Amino acid sequence: MNTSIRYVLRHMLRGGGKTILAIFLALLLTAAVGRLDSLRQHYEALSRSVVIRGSVLGGLTVYRAEKLAGAEQVKDYYLEENVQDGEYLKSTGDRPSWDGTLMFSSDYTQSIDGNVEWLEGWDGESFHKATKRVCLMPASMAEEDEIKLGDRIHIAVSGYGYTLSTYHPEITDPDEIIEMYKRNTSPATVVGLVSETNLTSRLWFPIHGMDQYSSMFPGLKVETAIYTLRDYRDAQPFREYFQQETSREKGNPSLYLDTAEADRIRKMANLLSTLYPIALGVALLLGGVLPGLMVLQNSRETAILRVLGMSRKRVCAMLTGEQVLLCVVGLILGVAAAFLLGAGWELTYPGLHLAACLIGSIVFAWVSTGKDLLSLLQAKE
Image (cartoon, rainbow, N blue to C red; front, top):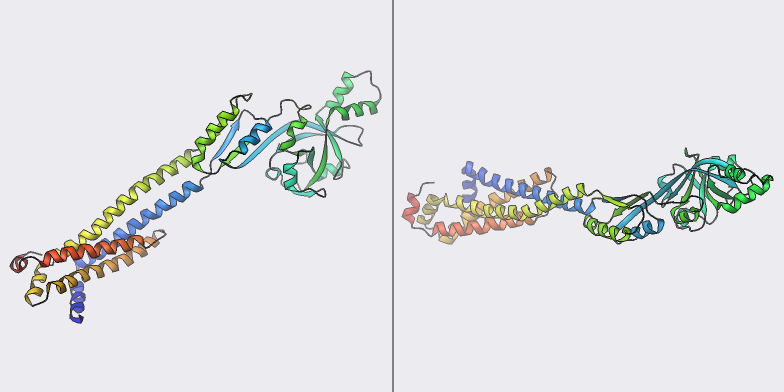
């Protein structure tokens, strides 16, 4: 056995170009398949994680917008409507204050750049779910108008107080005008004060309560509706569900789904998934056939060993062992190269390659040693 091992090692060292070629082929195939598999897994993971958002144009009612948000394809959503030119009157006030924007949204944190001081019993979650008439107000505005947490303000379109006086000239008592103002407008309780904000002319409201202000602001609709889907495969089902739900909606709202990036990634993932088994099969075929061909190149030495009295099985074992050792060296270098190329490796392919090399070497070695010794001695290497 020791003699056989020494012979194999000496033959590998004397092999020169053949030895280098055998190692290089195993290295190249291992690194290439590893890199291809790494790319395939990367694009598969990327296709599952790519974010697809749908934006609705044309406006939706709150009911319809929230029903769409409840679709099984929707992972997250954001609804918003801005009403310009609003004003309010505090309950103890004698004239309307402020002229600014009313923001109705499903997530106030996306439009607030400061901290919120909450009325006792309130927080961000309860505010978003509120169906009561509540709002958030900049702390600087509240301080200026002497408004505290829990106070009520009456929301109206800008200039509504002046409009009442104009249309009711018979009412000369300012207090009566104020009372009429309060009766005709929508009261809201201040449940949060926003500090350290640059948005000093804005009030924030939960989207659920938007319909309660429609008498003062007719035609209120959710103008910004963004839906984040759970998976790229949900794009078409959600599009069909949207068409079904909005077919009778006024204003003909339309859905825009940007799937270009997801489609590109999915096509690449499908291509790599198709190419990988083909490349794997070709690599394994080469990994089995090429070592066998190198065994056939040693026909003359095979004949000499047989003439010297070695058994056919022993010669086969020596020829196979040489190719397997070269393959192992090449696989180790190939795995290292694959890591350097950024491949996240499993040992599946190196194991299959080694098995293919072993089988190919055994088959070709057995065929080679079974030939007539004279023909082997006359063979050109």
